[in-house]
Length: 428
Ligand code: CMC
Picture 1 (tube, protein in one colour):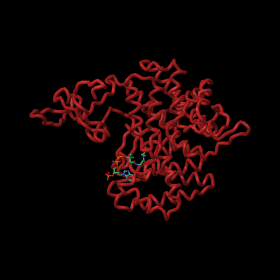
Picture 2 (cartoon, helix red, strand yellow):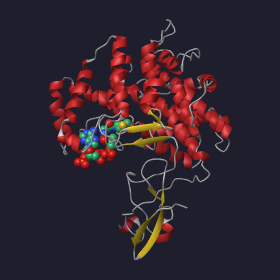
Picture 3 (cartoon, helix red, strand yellow):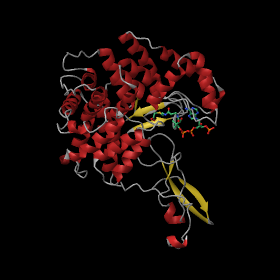
Picture 4 (cartoon, protein in one colour):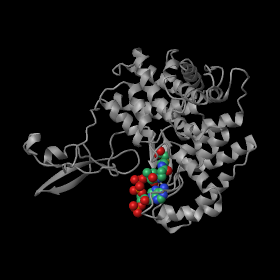
């Protein structure tokens, strides 16, 4: 029983609502019994004031620009850890010992191949299909291939499904790319790291030996870490909602991929680079800033603003630094990076952006790096999906393991017609 409570007076009735306290962050007013006690619902369409679940995975303090995974700051993880270790941390709650990490990495590497018949699935798509369309389809189709890991009541099957999803996602994404450029699919090479293997499957060709560039591998791995999880965002909430009905994990992750595809969410990285290309040179920036401020113009600065961060997105800080590392390693110097830096500087000194607390988010600089590495813009969101899979899977497991878990079923404020009699068509 909570020590603190909130008092609500409604319809001449006063009720006490328990106040719950997490380990850190805002307190939460527990309204689960509200409808039973008052007959009223709450109304919060974008969930701006609603906590949908209890979670011990990721914590964000949007005002301070803090992001913690299992308590560890994202900056420390991005600088000192690697994607396999962060995946283990998210799934298991603690950093692994050396043996645990080796075992986990080995297990993941044993699941990197796809059922051979899945490659014929790809051939059903048009060559110009968006990789996210292929990802939605192929990941959903995994449910038809791995029946031995779809019983969600069995923790062992849940674990195997989780490992399969994390391991196969690079193969699925790389194949989506290969299909779009008309090159043969490459099988995984498990002697490489998770990220090195993905780079080889994407950019290698059978006719040549592919050398993984260590600086690119490191940068890519860091980008995966930065995207691994982000609390109850739209796609994660979609995965949880799909999973709450008891749907199998592959179907749930396919639902998450579909939600991530939107430009307000995962596709913002693609949109941000397209926007920078459209702006082109720094002298055009003021025009686009004016457009972003104009309420009659739908244009927004892509890669700017966030529902939770009202301060610099800590992932964007790491991302900006990574741009320089990748440029140095590949000896490239894309002038769009200069444009991005100038745009950030000008937006952050503009009253509109200051007042609304709009700062660069993770997607603002990621496109510049991914493009330098050689990915076409259409692959950007597929890379986000690849990395976010571990977060989705960890959140899904956390939900299924919770004994209090029930199907997610919001209510509504109905504004349609009240009951009326049907009129036959000849009398209308
Ligand atoms: N450019 C110009 N104005 C903006 C922007 C922007 N990028 N973002 C928000 N605003 C304004 C918006 O017009 C609104 O103004 P007003 O109060 O006068 O109506 C105010 O700021 C609040 O915006 P909102 O849309 O109500 O805020 P939200 O929390 O619902 O939306 C957001 C958050 C991320 C969808 C939004 O900031 C946005 O569309 N940003 C561009 C897309 C983007 O970069 N998305 C990636 C998010 S981070 C990665 C991820 O999570 O997937």
